[in-house]
Length: 276
Image 1 (tube, rainbow, N blue to C red):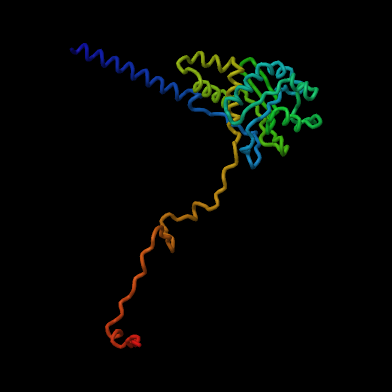
Image 2: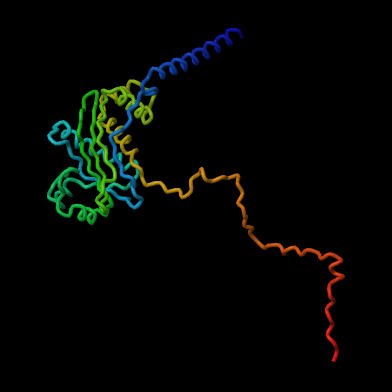
């Protein structure tokens, strides 16, 4: 009997020891304790993303001017870019391919900061049925570890031609906050049981870096402007009763005060009509 009890005690101690080791390992793992990267170079207008913008035309992904490394990464990153914007369901994505661009505007790609073809916005709105257009540019692409990606993205309203949202960020896996955030992203979206495989994904997968970085950028898009509150909460006292409450339903008849007895006696009796 003592041997059986001792065996259970040893098993419990082993399990508790393993749990404690895991907790200690978490305290030393940057994917749990940070520091984490925060996106900062993002612009959004005061109105945010208006509710009427439901379909967005995505222009073909371009590479940074003169950047041969980014040019090599465009075919691979174009797929991830479309997937991530479609996955978030902020709006419906209509992908405009390079071939379609060639047919409509005789150009295979367009940068957001260059002169647009004649009647570009009107033609794009008519051909795609979209309310906004998304220009995308891959500014940095380093496929070897530590991986690095740079995005420059602009969202324009096709009706007003105003800039709705823009981002210009570089995510460098060689920086600790970015690496920790990427590990945390992979830990939440992949199996956490194989730490070696997780580290391999962190070091060798531009695709995972693209998914992480785009999810961080897309989360900064505010879908619509919050409703304005006409009365501040501080000015509302829930304990204070209104001065003249309004009663709902039938109202009781007004009370009639009784006349004193002396007044009744002194009152002049009404004359009865005489008979004819």
